[in-house]
Length: 293
Image (cartoon, rainbow, N blue to C red):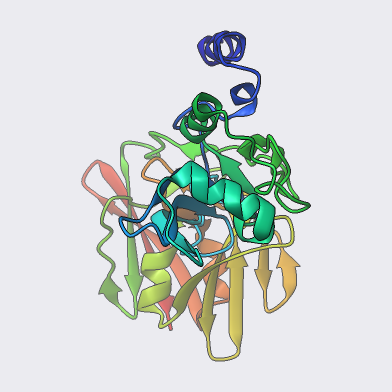
């Protein structure tokens, strides 16, 4: 509600041209889209080059976040692009007005460029009319909220919080008879199953972990070893094993530390054998899960 009120207030106060600009700091990576924000312009000291500075928000490049949330992608700060001039000019306004009449294509902003509020205000103060900047792939008044992802806004997945299972049950995992040491997360008892951190065990089994997106721009974690390929996502209620969907009693979840947790049954498809047993030690029980590569 506070954010909505702030937006309404700013739209009332900004001049007509600046009213369409994003709220400062409101730019976000958008899955499946790449756009730029024009931060500023200046004329070089010799008057022969116009320097433009952008930030780039790409939902197509960089290391994709397995959560599939809006935080994935890559942001490049302060990218400089130069416009060469055929002769020296005394001011930025003079150079740009000459280009408008002689070579307007040079003024075209890159596709999907959002002009920052600061630049819009500077253009307004100087009386500059940006007739050459906007074109088919960069319409006037574009804001980042106009750039829609194919799947729309992806909410943050549900986090498993405080699910440690019964206090008198300790869960131990062995891979090839060696205990697995978990860093932030330990196995959880939830959804009628045991959920374990996927990447740690997959690594012990010799799998290579990767990240991808599906056709709906949802983040997917992949595990590959030889001809075997397993794909899981905290947005799916299934796993894809060698191209086939397989459902388990418990779906893939995200821990409070934002680590992917998978049902231990998944490793029956990633290893040669999975067994478990209960050991009674004094007044507490211990579950031992043994996985063989």
